[in-house]
Length: 469
Image (cartoon, rainbow, N blue to C red; front, top):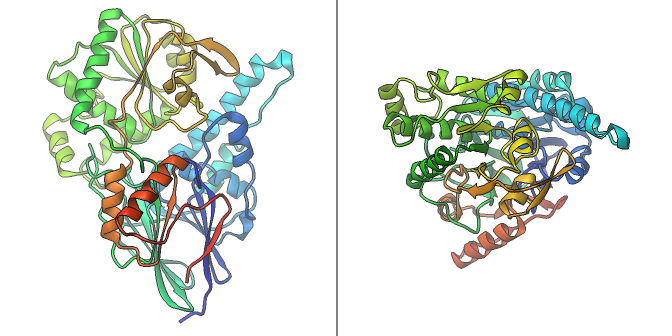
């Protein structure tokens, strides 16, 4: 038995959603659980993203839960600043992260170039945090591991990835830590999938857990039933068809876009909606959808989707959906009149091509902006969701005449009931840490856990540290 002291500290997604970074110190070794980018208002995001609260070179291993940028998006900056540690992730996450990180670098460079151009007269400039070379440096450190296969990231710690059911390749990290008091099992859920999903297997709670680090994004609310998704999306499409307008859907390129496409494929197949032109305008989403299609009989897809894919033959609509890669094709969409449906990243409207579509259409009354994912505080998506009538895009003010609709149906996060059921099934013996949630959501989940008799629940603040006894 190694006589280790173990402690955990929280450096992101503590009292807020996005930017997950949790540091586990075991003896003289340091493990980083996720290295995510904070997504919010440009100035807030810059301050939180550009500096680390710990020396990057001190990290001995990174354990990555999944490939969303709020969990992996600062890996290139970590390695740019001196980290040389291996990154452990599932094989699917490693494959997808290659696309996500390269795209993140390109988006930063493109947004900076455009922002600097339109603000040249004011002498205002921004710089990307990292470039594609930095992303490639990080990717060269990836060491894929299979689900349920044990490995030793550092001496004194045995690790295993378990299905998290959130997105393709997503994993809970189970760590058995040798301490002076004996073996302590810590499980970090990353983002936890809901009990009802469109594509993936449901997550199962691990057993013999001492410490549980779990997200709380929807700790204060319940999701709308997934069965309602098709009908609500059909209503939006019929309205756009009637008014001759555009439906702009800011969507996360990973999972949410593919879920939307599968529902659209079913709606089109049974002729529930008119044959409205559909464009997926995100090179990253196009590449990821190709990965989904390539592996639709494998990974962790559930039986219902595999059965549908075999019967349909083209569940991602490659025969009739226009998948847009080039900038020129994207720009041409601005000159086309509706009706049409455009799915484009980013999901919180904080970067990417969707900003150009919003800039060109947000002041038109027959435009519908359909929000289909969580909108973090301070993001443009949240401002639209909250009903602001004037917003800034690329630093320029626009009046909001478009209709803004929100569908909570699509969330790939566990809701309040899912989280409670998972925690009760895991039976954490020594403590629960609630992360990745706004203060209100965390407080509500903490109160619900107390009512269930679950004790030693912590809502860590940024930088707060706890010993694992």
